Amino acid sequence: MENYNAKTKMIIDFPKNGFDSDFILIKDCLLYVGGNDEFHHNELYHNKITLKQSNHLNENHIVYAVQPQDNRLEQAVQNENIYQQQTKRWKQSFLVFKNPKYTTVSTDNIAFFYIRNNAVSMVCFDKQEYTLSQSLDQITAAVSPDQFFRVNRQYLINFKAIKEAELYFMRKLYVRLVIETPEKLLINKEKSPFFLSWMENR
Figure 1 (cartoon, helix red, strand yellow):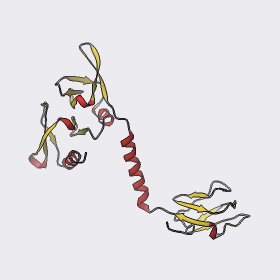
Figure 2 (figure 1 turned 90 degrees about the vertical axis):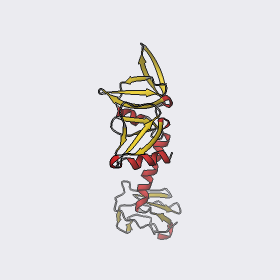
Figure 3 (figure 1 turned 90 degrees about the horizontal axis):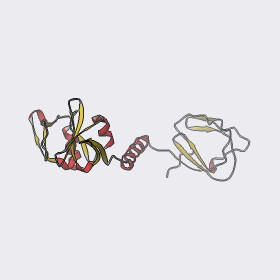
Figure 4 (figure 1 turned 45 degrees about the horizontal axis):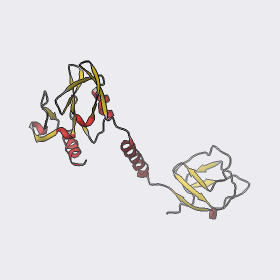
């Protein structure tokens, strides 16, 4: 742990007149202050703290100051996004209506979703097909990205439904499913690397 002698790259005014805690967070710099002295902060300048107080804070009171590297904030944000994704409760089933009954279909039993006649339909592994009220964008956001992949604007497919993928013209990928689709599933060259990475890193 490095000692920055209470130096910080940020310039900030403290909103309070005094602190009596051992730990002080100054923007991106965490200070640990030894002892129980109460002191007052009025100004903070670049690379120097100016203290206006009745009880002077000696430099030896500051045990250490930890200031993260610039890229640590970005890494923290990435870690938070990963944590939220891992802990998010993904949709496990869909409520459907057919013949005139309501039932639920588990996402594990859905081979793919697709847009047909401006409506979203889902096709199950048993080849049953249902129409949904949600948009394909809404469904994409609701299901697990580990389980489903948006291959193009019209199709969202289940990993378990993939039979094979082969190279196609213009560096596209042609994806075949175990359930026949109304159109060829083509992934453009820009999205193809992400699809292959998704297939490999699961």
